[in-house]
Amino acid sequence: MAREEVLQRALLAALICLGAATLGARADLVQVGGSSGWGLGINYPLWAEQNPVYVGDVLFFVFPPAIHTVFALPNNQSLTACDFSNSTNLSQPNNSNVAPGLVGVNVPVSAPGPDYYACEVDGHCLDGMKVAINVLPGPRPVLAPAPAPGAGIAAGPSGA
Ligand SMILES: [Cu+2]
Image (cartoon, rainbow, N blue to C red; front, top):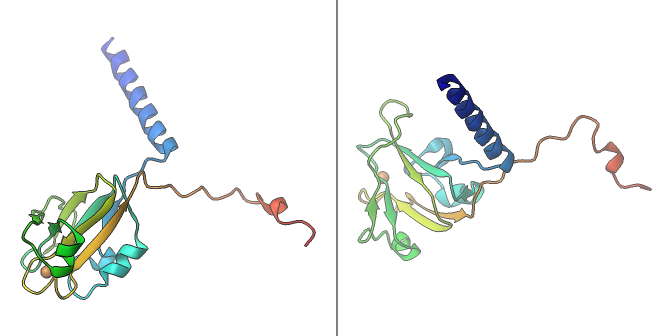
């Protein structure tokens, strides 16, 4: 009886996984700044433009803790002015999967719309250590599987 129950639970878990895969629900851990991480001298507007973020993703800030911080700012005005008066300090590390000397901060994104982040260490925000991330409605789209070899050859325009 107990064994049956275990089997049933395993089957249920497998079906749930299969369902999630089929529906394409996928959450990505998105490292802010890409491999450069969170620091000075990085073109965050360009990075944000090239790296769409979707509801359900988790932003991942990686930085040396003695040098930088991560704050969430309330709006674009505060980001532009580097005004931290209504900001939230998110600098507490919660992801240890980083290289020695660095810390990792996961920030799940649960709603669409723009999010604003900056470093509040003196001068860093004004030097460009800030990012506006336009979170897109989820879930993150899954890339279509590659066509089978040979497929599509007959589908080209005819009469060319
Ligand atoms: Cu900084």
